Length: 136
Image (cartoon, rainbow, N blue to C red):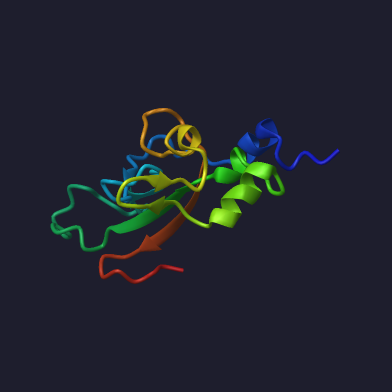
């Protein structure tokens, strides 16, 4: 049995990022709020938050998180729903109407990162130092 889309199995592989404040980056008129960012302040083992030797926190590091709604959670590969969405390619915002990539009740519901409910997302964390350089 292929259990690659078994929610219980997938949940065990996920990292819990619910403690992060996620800011959506989609436009005001967008119906499918599916992109977001977060910032995590990292403290090294020698970080002393009140240390006067680094008053501007120039030695502090940050991990920037990029989040996108995990549509695979709701529209598994090969499903009719995903095939229809792939044919559309994107949501189209026309002057008098919107043609959503996924049904509106899904794209602004379970697939949306906007609400305060727990959501499934694909997330990438990139660690940067204060000058914006990526830390490998």
